[in-house]
Length: 416
Image (tube, rainbow, N blue to C red; front, side):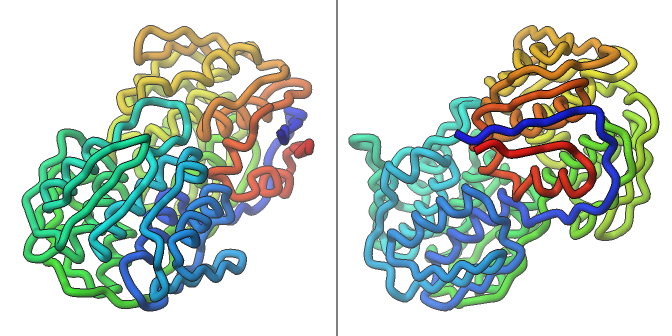
């Protein structure tokens, strides 16, 4: 497995272009199953997860033309209504093929998904919602079997806010007969991006961006052209990096209107920023100040940024407290950060961080996607050399991170 070798203590200076959002691209790619027309997508990030979902889609008979950040899909030849265990086991987002296949073809067989080991993340809300739309669903041998003659509109109130659940049910409802109301829907910008694409494809959706989506089903959807929104998590990750290392970077191709809470916390820890509509100039010339926060659903503080901010807190000039409310196992990076000399203690779902004067390089192991990014940040702030193992997690969600960091002065090398 590949590793990253990082020599810390280097300030970051230069320009970084943000890629398309992983969490928007994956459901948008699955929307290609909803139509026989061409779906032409741009700003698709070059990620392992994107490659995986394209392999899953190609297995169904969906025609895939992938060229760098451009993907064209054509669903006129779909002949296999199945997503196999061998591919689905590596990525939870693959459950997103269930709703589109069922809605368009009346049948689907999808393996129960895998992914990062940061919590149980059950799919029961997906199943409950599809059953409300009239699907017959059973689980046998690790597979979800779903059938229906035709989905019928319904009022669905999920027991919890679920991003992929909202996306799956939203896609299914576009082809259901009659009106569907999704209440307690996720409001994340990536959900909004999917909804905007579906409208381009001919769907009728009201309430986009709110927690109540009203969908009037249509007989069929058509092709469309769409650019995936930029990745707010990647942008905030690089801003955390410069906050930890010091320096002056300019982030471009970003959307500054979709991560206000993270930007507020970055200002609180001392990062100077000039924020434009699509760019951020960030400078840091002092030790970070500690920031405390509690993760919650959008528009609150994102769980996907918890680990990266904790990395900055490890070298802050004081103590901080971080409470994780979304995933029960999302403190696995704490042990690895402590190996670098951090002072972090956990009690239940809360971490208490006492900032230290310096971190020192050491061998560490990535445990999940965002933990990987947090270890990269901590390693760049540390004295000496750090080797991060199991960085395949990083490749799932960051488009050539080491290349982007090296271009702005970081000493980061991939070891094959």
